Length: 270
Image (cartoon, rainbow, N blue to C red):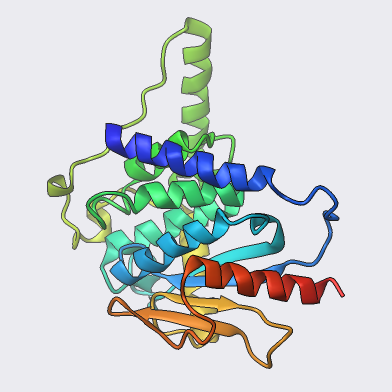
């Protein structure tokens, strides 16, 4: 865990430095390039493209030029515990929902630092457990309860109890303890949802809505990267499938994605 914290701290620092390098003259309402990642939280191919895109976000001025959305693959099944079936089991469904909650309630740089933390070490490890998501969010500098992430994942009752505990700790000068992250061998990655951490209504809804959107967009591969284009007749798309990059006409290195984003952004400003 100490190595994980060090790795995340480096990620937070590098992504945060990119924020500080935004052009000072850029209007806050300047049009941005829509970028979408379609992934699965416990998918090795998703980890590949997410790692590359972390480097994209570190490129000069990229954070200020994009709106990044992340959506998830799955099948809608109203009888399933989360309303969705996920390729890598219910634990992956939970991980997908957790990441959606972080993206919804945290700035992009802190979301991506949390995501990188979850992807660190023995992937997929314990992605989908609340303890890991909370540890990564905390190390990224996100307030679990005040951000709204805690309520999204654990629910309003848990949020009320958590904030009362924080107040009590502040009044008594004691430390709030974050639940320990389980070792990989302590979890069953194919466990049913009723054996996993509870998932609140907001997290479930975000998961179902995300999967519906992915289906509507016709995306079938994790990972699929789409960059909206005003220079071409259709979005620029790049896929990782079985560890192989496919259909990436503009290249698939971080510098390639950054170049395309800058070209598209420049055209939007005309």
